Length: 608
Image 1: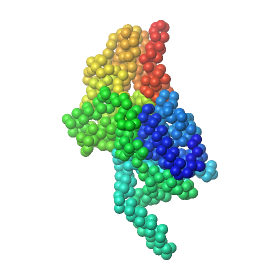
Image 2: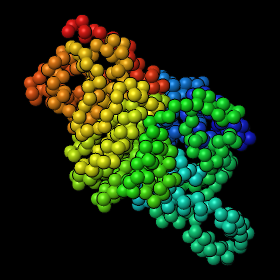
Image 3: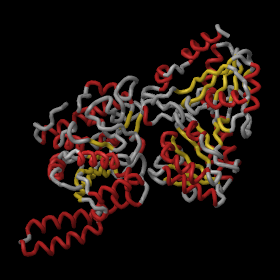
Image 4: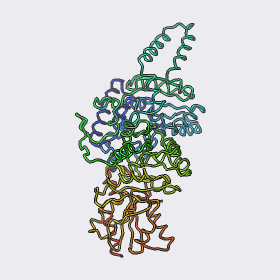
């Protein structure tokens, strides 16, 4: 643990510079979240100077901005392993360090966690308080306001540090974020607020009452009125890069016996000129050259996200009924291309996956063809809306699920492992997947033309395992699979990127196995599956989803119903949260790389 408490302000500023350089050094080699971490260094130093994180719960919203916290708390040397296989996580993780209070990879959970911690502290009659660091982008999610409602009502002692950098991952959306930025950024506001402070300091006691009334009236044009009306004490805005001022405010807030929100203003990328400011591309970066900011290994091939965006744009130009929504991830999902081209038909609703889904349900009811474009990990947050608002009404909402399967260095909180299983539970839902670039375009055409029920199609991060046009692509037909290669004795049944994994294994076996692209996980091609089960000794199932509730389990159930007892082996994800690391290395850990699968199959072949 770096001992900050005995440092002078000058020494703390020097430490901030050292921490910032360390972050840049490691992220330039490993990739990771950069600009958000550079912007929060002074905030985190001041937190550690005033509070002991072993006593006071330090709760980071999302926690991708907690690198400085990791460096201060005994991970300076191990920081080289950031986001690497068996290395330290890019997010806070209690199993990694007792200094980390909670794991967090999704936005807007911090205030609810703070409420829970404050309740427990009160029940224990303790005199510590939760310290919450939340970005203003997280203020766009409903969960934040559910927590604020209780905080303001019950008055739990808590310090909420609002890191206002006028950014989420991309440009922030919503009235709250605009309110925070526009009311505090004007020259008029800053000059008048400064003038009021000076007047109050110099007025005699007899005039203080009227001056205070004037200051209260002035709050009507400041963010303070919002939070104070919610029942919180409000301090700010203050310079989030001024360590001395931060320490002074934090020490005063420590003595409040009620919730206080400290509004700090920071700059994303602070201290690294190339990344400073409102640059979305510096939020999460691949390895790069520190001097130029240029990626070290730029990807030349077009990825599934770009293919999706380009094809959807092509279809939207032809069909005015096509609309779409994303939740604070316009560039990550490729929907920024559509928003720029058709701003009245494609929307970013900020960090509000449930709202995005329910709003599109109503658009489907009105006769539109809505696409909900969200990462697999974040779509989990809309589960109730998918059931209650889309599927019960059997509305033709189209869910385009990006980042399906293993996503690599972001780890447990971001792996796209569960969508097949949880969507498979829902009546009326159609689930399918492309196997390569070309079939992704065909998947979009099918989605556009299919209006009988809700549907979901999934595609991976980075690229498909199956090289494009390895097999001839045909149009999707509801519930129909395709035989790609005919073999004997054993059959490989693949779904989505699982087709590519099965193909690579089959190549190593000199194409001895029958290879099937299931295409649909729901409805399955039951007729073809039964036929193959009767003519082969063993079936191997490949998909980038969990085993429980997965494709192999559903196929087993179907075959058992007809008393077909063909042996089945699943190469799906085990019942674990998948760790972080480079995708190929994670596959080896899961025994899903080609050689591990070959070893398992060759052992089976000897016994057939």
